[in-house]
Length: 85
Image (cartoon, rainbow, N blue to C red; front, top):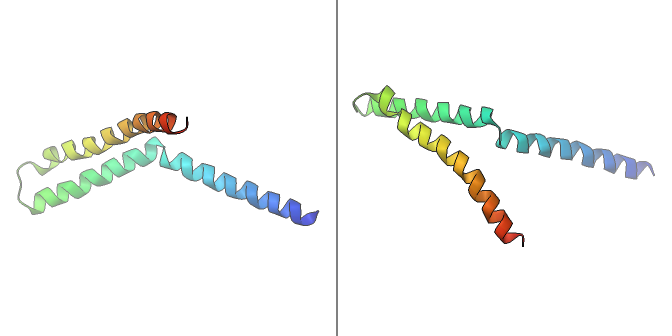
């Protein structure tokens, strides 16, 4: 009986970890952090490459990433609905 309780506790602990990971994957904090990091990397690249207005021109690719994360959720829901029939 003790083994069953131990296994059940391990499963509950694992489930909490998996739920937290899923929450992070879909969180706005993660999206904004990746958008900011994308922006900074592109600013550095544009600056080193000598392209004009690196701070302004880097906004477009960073926003494109953010937009892609928003549309993928919708596409995923449609795809799952179709494939889980």
